[in-house]
Length: 161
Image (cartoon, rainbow, N blue to C red; front, side, top):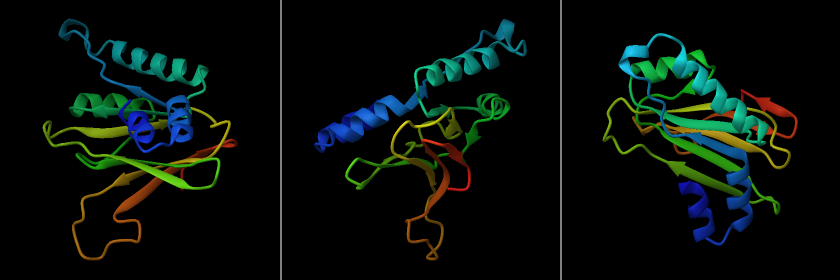
């Protein structure tokens, strides 16, 4: 995944290893038009979540590209961000230094939006997930427009990060 390469690129192998282990990503689910509305996409999405959780991923991220995909993610208890907002993952490494990874959607697909779900515990340091909103006014928070959505730690998750 891109964020793993980014952490390796700045010499943070510990963060790269933790994020690789703790963050799973679904890169698209498509169902033939002849078989839509049969629950196939939902079963695939739930299987992906279950598989990732069994392999100790703490969160699942994906990008929805249309209303149907956003609906699928909502039905499977994923939080769907607003369109084209960025996904922010903050990880506190073993020496207590926070590392932040931001991935914006480039607007190529106007309906695209990030989706995230808690799968389980981190078995290690806390991961905090947020939504980077486009700055729409001069009244921004100290986190530069990041709205923290959830935190996952060794005890589970706290939706009020």
